[in-house]
Amino acid sequence: MRLSSSLTNRIFLACTLLATVSLGFAFAFVNAQVTGEVEAELRRDLSEAGTLVDQRRAIFTETFTTFTRLIADLPKLKAAVSTGDAPTVQPLADQYRAQIDADALVLRSPQGALLAASGTESDALLGAVATPPLSVDEVTLSIPHTRGLLQIVSVPILQGDDPTDTIGRMTVGFFLDDRRAVQFKAVTGTEIAFAAGGRVLASSLPASAREGLDALTMARGVRPITLHGEEYVMLARPFARAGSAAEAGNPTTLILRSRTERLRYLSTLRAGLAGALIVTLLLATVLSYAVARTMTRPLAAVTDAMRDVAATGDLTRKVTVQSRAWDDEDARLLGSAFNTLTESVARFQREAAQRERLSSLGRLSTVIAHEVRNPLMIIRASLSSLRGDRVSARDIREAVADIDEETQRINRIVGEVLDFAKPIRFDFAEASINDVCRASVAAAWAGDAPDNVRLELEPSIPPFVTDAERLRTVLVNILVNARHAVQAVAAEGPRGGAVVLDDPGVVLRTERHESRVVISITDRGVGISPDDLTHVFDPYYTTRRSGTGLGLPIAKNIVEGLGGTISVTSRPAAGTDVRIDLPVRAGTPA
Image (cartoon, rainbow, N blue to C red; front, side, top):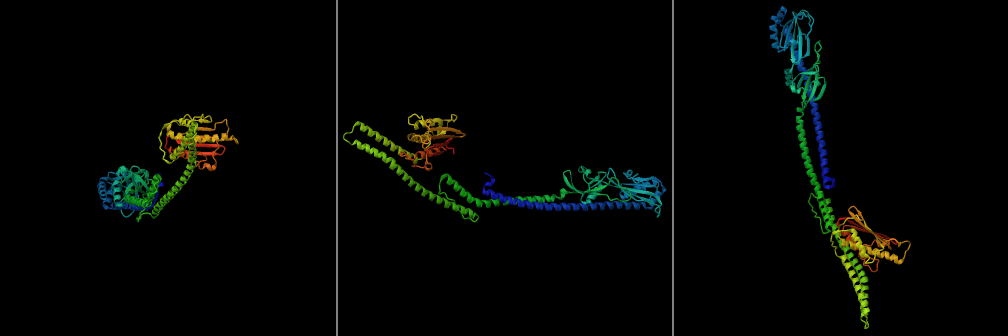
């Protein structure tokens, strides 16, 4: 049975599907709106963080530039640089580098000669700023370094207010390294990375999380990325050009906002919505099933009652009709209509049975009046002949023979009536259908040679389970009718080619069709008129003066009891064909 074949299931599935589609659409709509809003907010926050990073870096650079200018303008430094003595200048370089927390500090003479170098990374500053002698230009630039991005500020040291009176040059360097990136992260709340030359030089991310980040240094704008299973939204901001010197390697700041963390609360929201969806679906399922049951429970009661009536034929079976508030009114009406229908059918059956009994009684009375009265008259005449005074032994023997023959005839009539009236009891056993056919032919011809019969028996038919004696009764009855039909044609003589004397008048044939066996009996007799053909299985209906009209009805009852079917086709003056279809195992429906 298909899932959709039940009304309960259809109502249940329709309601559940409607709830699922509605709630699913609501869930998808809310999820899409919230996700879109979160994504937009994430991009806005990232853009604001990028602006804050640029401002922070610019302030950082401007601060070091200011410090550098102030130190270059100190009289103490000018006096030391004007001596041109490196041992005198070096202590001041170390002191001032420590005061401004620079990573490197270099002092040169106007001719470019090195006067002092302070800091472990001072070598990186040597040669970084190539200035002509007595240059008064300020230089700010960034250069890649293994430690990070080195920011360089170089200013001239002037003797007085005259900008052309240069006595030296001071260059200060500080790194945008991992430490600075962590400081920027604390301010902006985002991950920071400094890149140049196509690779990341410093970052607030752990070293293990930087893999794959180098390939993204040339990207521009906002884009989603994934690093070690965590989702980020990244914004690349190139450094703004400052000063007159070109910056090497296109330095870029990468700002990364964790999308996973930002959307974590969205996952909680989704889980809540999913939970609400599941609970609602369960409630919708239970309610839809309950509603469907209020409609289908009475229908199931009606169906069960119909099934019981079909199995038992008991038309007194009723459907209990209740009037609860939640029961379906249409279903209650259907139950009431079924009860009314069964009562009407039972009444019609009683009336039809009464009419059939009366009709059968009338036909039986006709049979008895016709079939029993004639033998009684013959018996009475025979007894009258025995009352004479001069009765010979021959007359006695003839009278006794007539009386015996007529009593047998009466007994046969009574036996057929009783056989048709009482239920048939079958004795199933394994039998050979071909042997039953041969025995039936021998019995139908009552000891005479069946020269006018041809047997076409299929030898491959195996023995099967049936009631051989009952089946023989059926075949004998049909073969006797065929014999009488052929003899009637022979007595009248050939008319219109109705029979050919050289051919057999009766053909009995057996055939195997998979799990069934077909027995056909064909005769070239007088045939049956169309009006009589429709009544051949009606009890007590006969066209023979000596028949009771119970032969074929009894045969039909036996064949149907064996699980088979019987059919008759005939044309007047052309013959009759009787076809019996039986299962290999008796009792299997046709």
